[in-house]
Image (cartoon, rainbow, N blue to C red; front, side, top):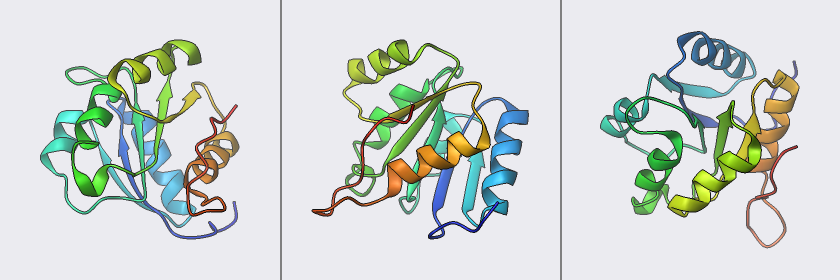
Length: 139
């Protein structure tokens, strides 16, 4: 894999240890700084400086990914942080969960390739003309 266009600070939230470790290792190998945590409660307990991107699973025990994103969006410095929701649910179901809590995020359905993940990250974090990030949903 090539080096990223820019080094991102990524908060990775997933209760599945093997997925969390694999994604963390791959993203670190790509040159990103990754903070990986096992769930939303752990992530909420350790919020500091806002990252460049949040990657979170939807289906987690306790607080799910959509509710986690809604909670962090209440913090002014975290309000505009782009988010990528990864899920085994159908994309329409995941988007419905996000809509229910009023959170915008891209959705990537599992299983996905590492190339698809990198493309989704690029789509979420690339500024568009006019200074806004590209909010299109990866396919």
